[in-house]
Length: 155
Image 1 (spheres, rainbow, N blue to C red):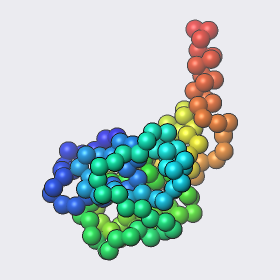
Image 2: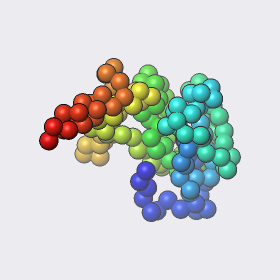
Image 3: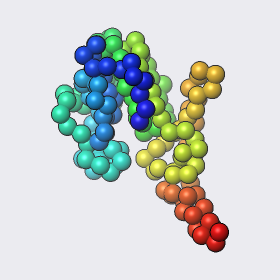
């Protein structure tokens, strides 16, 4: 994960959405979807989710916070897990709870190489605009990388 140095804890309340196993140290509050324990671990990259900060769960589409209660949000490697039809509402909720934030997700080239099954979308930034792409079913995790490695053994 890569974060700009300007994100400093204590400056203003920072919400991290989907902190997973490795949350940003500057976040003050964590928000996560109400997954089953099995799904929570899968969504965290098969690592045990982190602990140590206030963790709030939500179900459905709405985050359980008042408007603009945070000054900044972090959504690092979260958007690719959000069901395609819920992305507009998810982004609207981020904008509702904070005036600024940071979104990071795997580029399409990463997904071509790794094909993570829990990822339903990928994206890219062109001319300062986030472009999202819905993933289509493929051959399974690491199929392209495995094939490439197998072919390269001859060299």
